[in-house]
Image (cartoon, rainbow, N blue to C red):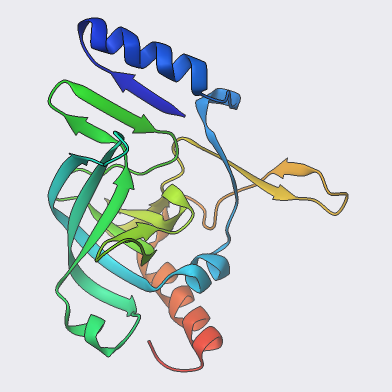
Amino acid sequence: MLRFRAPGALGAALLWATFLTAQPAPASASIVQALDLEELVAQADRIVIGRVVFAESYQRPDGTIATAYRFAVERQLRSDGPRALDEPEVIVRVMGGRIGNIGMRVEGEPQFDEGERALLFIRQGQSLAFRPVGMAQGVLRIRMEQGRETVRQSREGLMLVKRAANGRLEPARGAIADHTALDSVIQQVRQIVLRQVGAKP
């Protein structure tokens, strides 16, 4: 769901356009298929631990707003080729952002703060930018808790579902439990990469 905020008549027009075109979703969330860790790894061209060093929002030709985040790569768990191993940064593009007094939010798209660290499952998008796999599912935010680094899957704005044996969609959990140790997730990811590609990442 898109949410626009703008002053005066422009704001009213954008809000009215959103009201006419938006499709309602429970709890104002994007409904997407839940991906487990195996699926996140399989769909990612690169898996990196990085820190946000710069962010810039811009308007796309269709009038929507997107934000490009530049991540300094601290650790690489999977790359899409030998050249990527030498690249010290990656650009991650998400929908939504703010330009002056006009903002756009897309439920389920991650947003980052400068200096924030995350384990990213990303795939090649347009030009040189990457996109998170499964919207915010492909972002594991890194936090320090009681002296150890933990990760939390970024699921804000998402309603995760899986198709049951009877064909019905049912609520589903994310790929990992909150407050999982970062080292444990890294080990799991490395094992999955070895199984999937048959070589060390």
